Amino acid sequence: MSTTTDLPPSAHWLNAMARRRSVPAAGLVEPGPDGPTLERLLELATRVPDHAMLTPWRFIVIEGDARSQLGARLPQAYRDANPQMDEAKREKFAGIMSRLFPAPVAVVVVSRPNRDTMIPVFEQELSAGAVCMNLLHAAHGLGFAGIWVTGWAATNEKALGLLGVGEDEKVAGIIHLGTAREAPAERPRPDARALTARWTPPD
Ligand SMILES: Cc1cc2nc3c(=O)[nH]c(=O)nc-3n(C[C@H](O)[C@H](O)[C@H](O)COP(=O)(O)O)c2cc1C
Image (cartoon, rainbow, N blue to C red; front, top):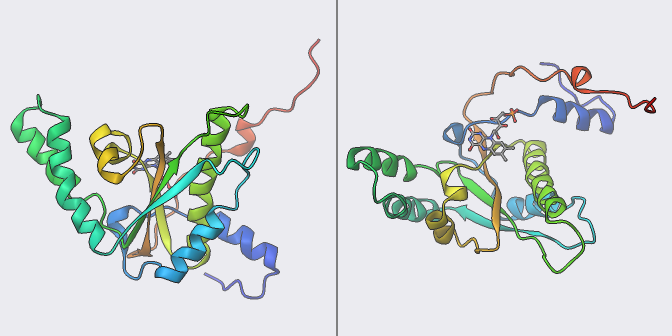
């Protein structure tokens, strides 16, 4: 792959956007972003459109020992959430829950819409999604890799309680961050032209 150091700044940016790929959490290894770097990433992540400047999102960082401490507690949350499930199946999935945070750092992007405003909740949730995407791009820009996931830990009441997500909040995404063990292969991309119509006045 050719280097991009001779490209003008905008080309660097576009090139990075064109190349970014997600890497599964299990494929994210050390080094992850250290304290100051993560702070910088989160600062960049918050530079999103936000109708009426409501800041309808916040972060929960899971790093260091907190990963194994959370991993030790998630299986019981899974058992508590599924009391009727066949025991063998429940234990299998409970085991999976203990390994949900393998990457060096995970950032839970929490959507916390303000309901005392005219701004629709949907718009505020979209802003939280933009935070997730900004975080991925910023991490990629600093040479890290990541992935945006949700899944059981992001949606189940017991798991949300354990994470510290409030009842009036939702998880927009769990962004796992680290260094890609292997460079990810490209995947098929949608054809933007096939998804695009030009508006014309109705007859
Ligand atoms: C809101 C949201 C939730 C997602 N949840 C998961 C998930 O739980 N597990 C997963 O493997 N991918 C999930 N994905 C998909 C990945 O983030 C990603 O789109 C996919 O791996 C393709 O990677 P790309 O960024 O290289 O196109 C989710 C994507 C979004 C937008």
